[in-house]
Each structure stands twice: as C-alpha cells, then as structure tokens.
Image (spheres, rainbow, N blue to C red):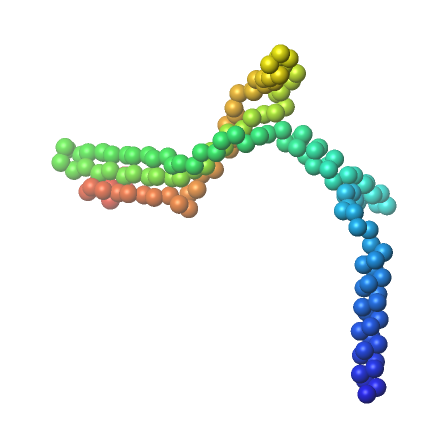
Length: 149
C-alpha cells in the first residue's frame, strides 16, 4: 500500500511539473537561430533573414531538368567478313538554371496604361551533368566484339 501511494505521488508530481512547463512556455514560434561563433561568442540571427541571405547567395532558379541518356556506338569490320558492334548507353540528368544575380532594373519595364510588368530574363545556364553509370547498358554483337583490341 505504501508503494502505491509513493508511485501515485511520484506520477502526480511529474504531471504537475509537465503542466507548469507547458503553461509557462511561449506559444509563438521561435524565429531566431543561435550559432556559436567562437569562445564565449554567440551570434543570434532571425531564421527568415538567414533564409533570404542563403537564397541571395545561391541566386539560381531551376527552370528545366532533362533526364535522358547518351548512346555511343563503335563498329568495325575486318576483311569485309568479320564484323563487330558495341553499344554503350548511359542515362544522365541535366539541369538548366537562371542566374538571378544578372537581373537588374534595366531588365524590367512597366506599362502603366495596360498595368503590365515585363521582365527580360537572362540566358539559361547549363548546370552539372549527372551521369548515372550504375544504370548503364552495354550491348555487344558480332564476332569481333569479343576481341580485346
């Protein structure tokens, strides 16, 4: 019986502490990020401000992503009788970006009568080409395709 009273009191105290912590904690979402910048130095920045700064640094807008493959074919003949053909197909992903750092006010025009804003975008830039060699396909055919040369 003593044990039940002790466990009941322990559970009640934990629930009470949890309720007090819940009541005293702020309801608004946190909008600050704290970073340790050195010994005894802490830098506090707003999360939204940090997000905008990272977007400014990146300054890229993904416009188009192409997923396809490239194919290489090699064929040869020897004495017009023996022939061989090898084909290699490798899939890849190519991204095209707009560099937003090239946009200036000179690229923007406004027609007040028609209430139209026109923005002349910079040229597309080719991003990295990501080959996927793990999905490559190789096809060999003919007698000379078995030759190491």
